[in-house]
Length: 255
Length: 256
Image (cartoon, rainbow over all chains, first blue to last red; front, side, top):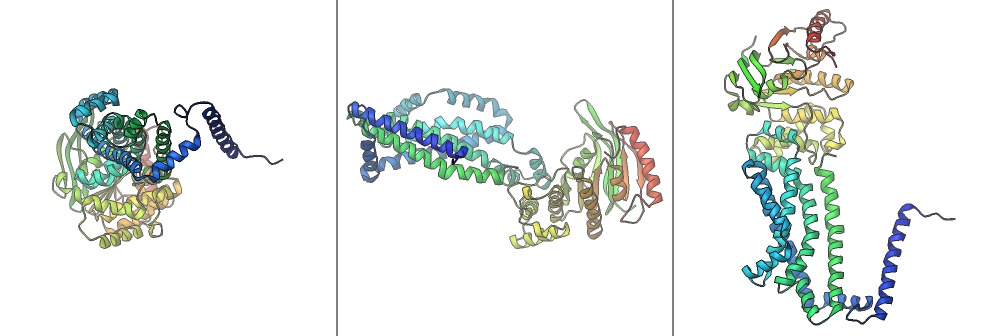
């Protein structure tokens, strides 16, 4: 008898599980009203509509823009704060407290404050996402800086007395794998926060669409947004981040 | 002795409560190959760091080419115990790294040519495009040596560069470093805790005591190179003398 490899068995188990869930969904949707649980085919049509209708596709672009802008902002500010804390020891305690504070305050709280301060617009959404992911960058980049090979840094110092040359040629490349790992982690968080931020403080994006759909009890549209968010997250992680991280780990870490 | 390129006059250094050097004086001539030999933890590497301005002495005077090490660090290059290569750069790019760190103003092609020349000197031209993970321990250390040679230093400071290598590679690299020294005429200060290594390589050996460190013996060697400890009666006698002195400093074994 043909025996399946462990890998094939794993894939079979995972695919079977998806089929069972889909089957259960179909059965449940047949018994429940459409506004409670739409059928998978309705959600699929809604999702295709979302992508093909310009009016809705704009919201996909808006959410991607919010997340990307917040990632850039959080990355730049977080890395700058971590670098300051690493080289300017006097600021370490202060930065630790700021990171703890930012880490403990909820995204809804920031979203409400952002509406009061900036109104309902893109800036408010980007700032809310940026503030929530900021501690991810501060904490990870601080840890990354602590792990830079001291022997390499001393080697650099033996060749130059210019701090900037050692930083650009040795420290920065050593941080690349950690930078990407932080971006990858922050990306996942940013998607989740984007929904909340757009729902409360935005006038575009997935969160805004969900809010509109909720008001008109358009459950299939809510499901379509969830499906699209999952697809975007999966594609970004598997097509962009994972291969890039494999490359950076191979080339920039001492393995 | 030739004119002194490095001088220590009554150098003092403390790390917290521990005295490393109480009153260390020595002098190294231009073009000389000097080995600093001593037991583990006696401050051999610290002496190199003082010469290279990676550390400052608490007292006494250190001069390199008659000037304060702060003004002369650009005339030196280090080869450390571990190769310290950037894993994201190829062998050639690691050699270029030394020049880039030093702020070499030559154009890229000239720098590349110089880096290839340095790799050629250490016999690694064919491995120029390999990453450090693709090189053996000996090859990595050769790249580190090429990186040092590429910045055209007047003095090379070598901190137990072969200690982590297997005996065969170590022996081959010793012969190569002597050959490079003879070709280039650079001053080499070589730290080791291996008596045989010092005897094969050096013009002079400074044997250091345990902390607080002082020079307990200076051995001048004039045997022709390449040297063999097997059939050179003079070297064998020196070896016995040094081994008995060294055994008192590091009873566990001088040639570990």
